[in-house]
Amino acid sequence: MAEFTYAPPDGPLDVLHRDADLLVLNKPAGLLSVPGKSESHRDCLETRARAVYPDALLVHRLDMDTSGVMVFARNKAAQRHLGMQFERRHTDKTYQALVFGQPDATGEVSLPLSVDWPNRPLQKVDLVSGKASHTRWQVIERHPAHARLGLFPTTGRSHQLRVHMLAIGHPILGDRFYASGAALAAAPRLCLHALELAFFHPTGGARVTFTAPCPF
View 1 (cartoon, rainbow, N blue to C red):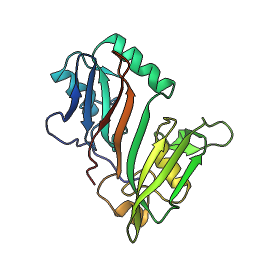
View 2 (view 1 turned 45 degrees about the vertical axis):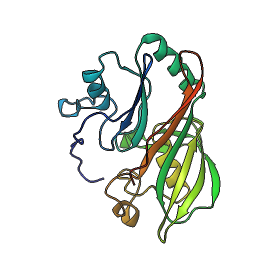
View 3 (view 1 turned 180 degrees about the horizontal axis):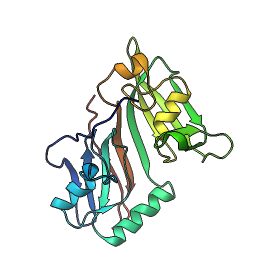
């Protein structure tokens, strides 16, 4: 991997929705979800959210290089409610990605994943001690050297979509961790976006869906 310098994008919060329980934001690519360990990595979406909404509470994360829908709770009860939905897989997540090559029109990957300890934070397929991981995909459109996919993870492992796409021979364009050669050079950013997130509202239980337009 090339040497990395953290230079998160500037700009105001992109608020998709807010109410007494929820703050739903569109996270830009290149911004950490939570603070990193070093002082130079303190800037993140959580810190920016709390600067404007002091009651914002973390519920889940997106990779730094991934953009899209991220929900915060605005009280402890809502945080517990949402956290339980993520844990019990009561949420529905839809991503879009540009991948190298031409995958089948539809398919699924069920490959267990674990941390690649010598190369952290990378993950790897681990058939012996990995955690069960499952992703479905569907081709949305095709281009000469790549395809746009809808990705539907039913588990939420770290780097799951990135490693699963690599495992089937179609790395995500611009992925500085898992792509190489033409696939890495094909895009200036990781072409992975959290397009849509659906869950039960903490108050009243109605099913709600939030969408952030794909920027690539």
